[in-house]
Length: 222
Image 1 (cartoon, helix red, strand yellow):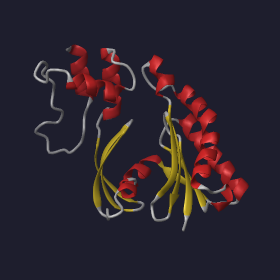
Image 2 (cartoon, rainbow, N blue to C red):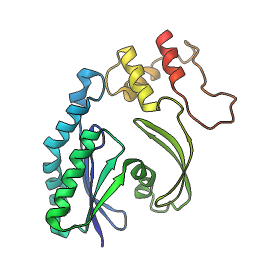
Image 3 (cartoon, rainbow, N blue to C red):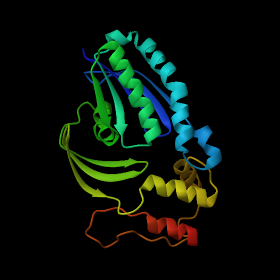
Image 4 (cartoon, rainbow, N blue to C red):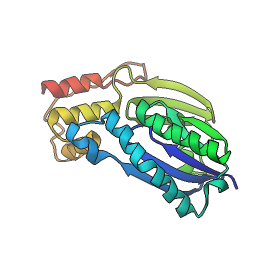
């Protein structure tokens, strides 16, 4: 059975996993950097890259140990090659290249968004192509038709900010802390939905695009 070592470091979380060819996750580790970035109200790219350097090697060792395998037992190595914060991407990709060179294993450079597009098939093995995907990830917000591996049609995207950016900026405006998404959600659950009149972006438009800049501006003016 094929065994892949995967490395992800495109933003503020470091992730390492062993995945079999039948899509079973053999072992995985995720390291969060929330505490490091919280004082700044957002992700600081330089801090993120340094944190990846500190934790990545021991995480790889831990995942291999949990999976009961050595690097020589892995069939290939995969790592995020972008898009993302360039410092973090380089940490993961260079580490993967070094491991591939040292072990003689093939290296696969993976598009971060393609990883998101295909990840539902890890959770639901019965999911077949084609399927419709709402991809909401940090600086991206897209509606995709996933026709197969390497076959994607973008049906819609944001015309300004992504929803993740909007959450973080609204949280910063309101002094709710970082990460913004959970903070805004907690505040909203205790709030009054009728208190403020917020715009409905692109209401009445046949265009399937997304827009969140107007909502950010409305919060600033409220």
